[in-house]
Length: 131
Image (cartoon, rainbow, N blue to C red; front, side, top):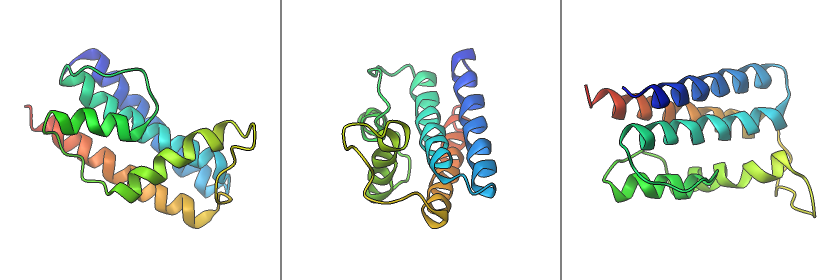
């Protein structure tokens, strides 16, 4: 495995662990930020390991499309992908009226954690299939 891919995996796992701790502490907005970051970094780990080209982005749809274009499947629904894309900017930068359509709460974070855990499992499965 490439050193760079390994670094992205470590960061993805750290973001997931952080999200779990933040969830347990009822800190829902930063929990959502870490959920999105965990998924983004997991997808980038695969892209980098597979030597695929991608632009600098935090957009889950774009990253998933890079993988799909190379016949690499991460089993996430469009609704889950849309959810992850809608939480990034509003949870980090509440500027210019760009607020989420929801207030971060326990259930939204729990749903996000389940998605992130599935994505990281999928990442490991894809990367392990190379060995």
